[in-house]
Length: 430
Image (cartoon, rainbow, N blue to C red; front, side):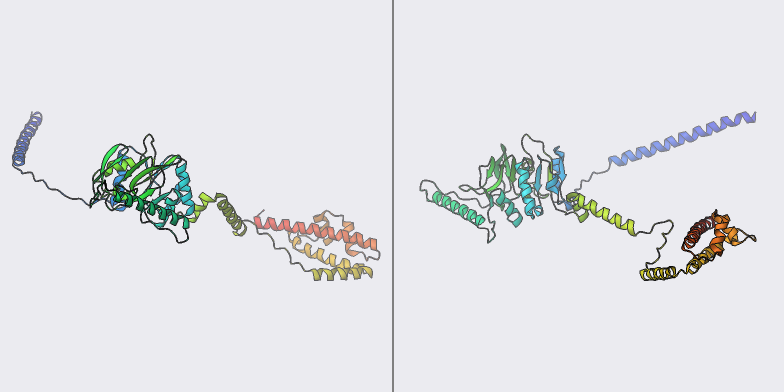
């Protein structure tokens, strides 16, 4: 009976603990709600510092505005940017280092003429000025080289034309002279049918020597412009002060909307390429891009040099004996002298001695009391009578000398072959 009552007692204790925990939890929740209702909200504004992307990219906000507006944006910061641009695209030159090379400037103009869209600032640095000369744009305050007579004549003619225009407008009695405002900040401009406000104070002015398709003119009675877009054959060039679209300036007036206007073309969905800096490639990258066959030839030459000089595994090639022509001539002369004097046995003696010297190392492989002639016959498969005659005959005639010399030379060749075979068997354990 006691065994049956224990489970009931444990269940009652568990239920009591559950009720107590529920009461405690309800009490804590009630206290928390009361305290929360008595709290006072405090609002505080915190200025967070800009991120690293904003600090390192002066035009990060303008770039993100294009991305958020569903335009394709790419960075083009290497020295081969002009070789990789598609025929129809927009190139924004924040950095003019790419214009240092005359060939790059010509490539840029050629790309624009084929349908490209170039956006850049009216700058007076040497690189920009030389590019502007190619598209007949004259920046106010720009300079010419001392030996560039054509550039000097163009600037002089333009200044004279502007002076005459100003003088004629000032001399008109029925036209009151307009007073130019002290500041042009926040002036209204028209661009692609939009009325925009932009901060155009202290911006560089320029003159376009052509009929511009779309143009924004700042000053009254003057041909000097602040923003302009004009055709260059199939392409277009937009000149605008790009400092209006920096992180700190794009939030002012309608600069954001103006930025979208100047970087896009009506009726075209171009990819916008931004050039903020130029990093020139290393030699290997330059060779692979400009001279791949030269780089391939260089690699093959290096491989051939390594193949020739790097140590290789395997048996060593025996060093050939040194060439001693004087010794060879001496031996031939001595042999010819002995042959003329019929000293046949003296000549055969050297061959017999060499044959016996080659036979000595082979005797250890064939123990026994056999004679040298018998061992030679067994090893070389020569007739034993020929061997005996070659070693024992006292030669008196030339034909005998020739026969015995042939026999001895054949024995020497066979013994040399046997020695090489025995050496291989010894080295490789055969």
